[in-house]
Amino acid sequence: MTRDGADAAHAPARIASPAGPVRITGHASPIIANLIVWALLVAVPFWLPLVGGYTALGTRILIYALCAMALNVLLGFTGMMSFGQAAYFGLGGYGAGLALMHLTHSTWLAVLAGTVLGGLAAVVLGGLVMNSRGIYFAMITVAIGQIFYFIAERWDNFTGGQDGLAFSREPLHFGSLTVPLGQDAFYYFVLFFFAIGAAIIAILLNAPLGHSFVAIRENRRRAAFLGLHVTRYVWASFAIAGVLAGLAGALDALLNNFISPASLYWVESGNFVIIAVLGGMRSFWGPLAGAIIFIGFQSYVSSLLPNNWETVIGVLFIIVVLFFPNGILGMIRRRVKFG
Amino acid sequence: MELVLFDGFNGLIQGAFYALMALGLSLIISLNSVINFAHGGFMVIGAYLAFALAPYLGFWGALIAGPVLAAILGILVERGLVRWLYGRPDPVYSLLLTFGLALIIEDSVRTIWGAQGLPFAIPSALDSPLSATYFFITGYRVFVVGAIALAAGALFAFLRFSSFGVRIRAGILDLETVEALGVNVYLLRAVNFAIGIALAGFAGVLAAGVLQLSPTMGNDVIMATFVAIVVGGIGSLLGSVLGGLIIGVAAGVTSAYFPVASDVVIYIIMALVLLVRPRGLLGQEGLFE
Image (cartoon, rainbow over all chains, first blue to last red; front, side):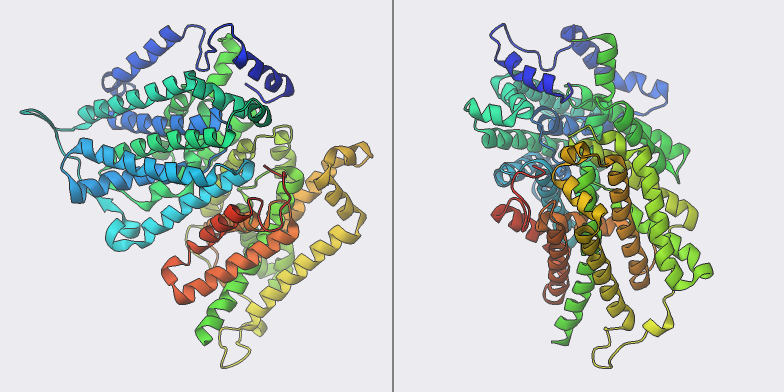
């Protein structure tokens, strides 16, 4: 959806129409499209090696897709330009890593600890940033991210400083059954949480809450006139994005068995924004498509051109901004006349 | 006491750099509506071009030629890439485009000149301390502060007294009306972008003499520059100078008393300012929100 006047004026009316629910995440045939997506995701360990990838790459794509989908609730659906998603991603990673090192041997609890740490920070800080708008919102979110980055970098004896923390994920226990988290098993472990995260986002976006987000994006002032507490909805959107970013960050730390301040750095926040825009900010699966392209491209180009892959990534950004402003999915949808 | 003076003076120099960078960035944000993430990259380009030209032109020639060449490159970028974003109000696109540009610039500089730091020679006349007690006040450092003050003063005079400068200021307030009055706004925006880049290039050459050249020298500055603009208020040029000086001196003084916090203090100042005054110190309500 573009931001020209006609669309902006039209969209709130459509949301308020009693003619039935609006499919924010809609395709022409959402069920078939979703089934195809999920079938491909479940089968990743079988087909990805055949096309030259490896399963851990698929795991990484899922994790980044989850974090970018979470960010997209705020960025694409609420229209708030957050540039600090890495803060909650990194906090999730530190939560999981520190829990494994000091508190527990359960990988499940480590994931929970990371999600809670990232989510708690987002809930508290969301209350501080919810009054800001536009560029100021982007700048205050990035400032908060940088504060966490420098804390992690300087608090050597707790966070390991620049060197980060190394730990190892523990096998899962189901009663007497022990499942070691090898490459493939860990992929399904991540897919399980990805499915939960995606379901939460889909349910919330199709609920009145999500429609309120879109109303705020399309016309903040009109949404306020309609009686929406705009700042509270921004807070809610920020909190949702942060909780799921914490989850993704915890999974990322477990994937690498490592966490360092780089996960909190603003460049990482920029990567999440790019993933969302690359795939399509206005569509539900956009960030997944963006993560596939971004992570896949990064891994392919950095092995092909180890010294100059940054240039290729930079050119990719510019091409996307100039020629595909609606992202890959947005472009496909326009061509095929989906929903 | 001398330690505080030492760090305070260092902070002042830092702050002067931030202020000069912030001025250029602020001009570009205001008239071109572009958040220029590549501003640090253009600073690096100015520095390296001066480094390459210094053997032929000498320090003083390179000090002028570096920023001018960077500005010409800036015009090419504006005409080729940035102007396509003028119709899109969402800041995300300009952020991403210039983010990509910053990656390309850093990578190219590293490929051409190497990742290692390079020394940049300054005239020996400027290289000696001015007094034995305050050994840290070298002639070059005083020169840097003076040159930045001169550049900032020249910019303000240009905007205040020249007809082109008046058009730029009018365009910042209401570009549509300025266009309706028959001003060539394409030229206006291109020149404005080039002025911003030239200021960044100038800062780069001066910084090269204080530190040394490295492809990543812009990365450390760009975030601080954003912070300076937000603290001062987006859209206010005077605010950018003020914000730059405040965070520079604050970082310098903090490193004297509480070195661990010297990096983080600027972000804490920014968060506090935004909580008390959401538009920054001198920003206007409703602008850029």
